[in-house]
Length: 355
Image (cartoon, rainbow, N blue to C red; front, side, top):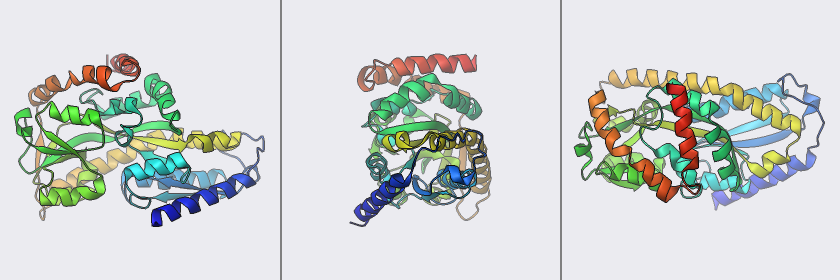
């Protein structure tokens, strides 16, 4: 009931803000617009993380820049995870217009936008996080073709960005595929994630992250995957003895808007949004790099919760890569609604960047 009340209140505020707006004909693309070019408005920006974590500080920085560019006329209110329910609740809130903007993970839309599961393919992107971000910035397969898939569901991704290389946490220490035999692996709600971990011999279980700490503590699940900063900040190392630096994937997030709301905005408002999103690509790359580096050091020096850090060799990673590659055919044949066309184009783009 509380969530429904928030949704209805949000919708009412949005309608009020839109009823006051008009197309001033001004172009704020240079970021130096004066306040009389913008009508007063409040936008809600929901994230999948909590204060201090990458997604939330991204929303805070976005809010700060929008306020500066509009001379305080437009206020952006960041919401941390849980403020509007689970990850799937937040997707519904964006689709329904209860919030205007969201940072979301494609994995939580995997049963809605099938092509979005492409980010669950292991060993698809380069080992270099920097090169991965370059591909996310420039890929036509993602920024044009995949965006169109989302827009049919009322969501427009404005940017894709990495939160860092993935790592596995567990109590047994994950070094080879045999370590996943009978292993209850927590995943997002994505059929392709299920297949990826079944290929290693694991038993995948979908859970929202709000339930994950307790599930790890009680042994309901045996392990999970996330960037290092998230593993440490969410205190998963308190209930897991080892962290394997596998770099089998990157955690990719999307900056998204409600499609109808965005298209209804005056040109100057659309310009200030797109300009801010574009300039924040470098900012968020540096932020995730800082957090992952600092939290890796903190984890290594945490004597209260000592954690064994396992860094896979190239030979060990190759054993996982061999099992992961056939999942691309599974994606083409069982997941993709366009016969794998987006994956095919993306693989060509990756090859061009990494040659």
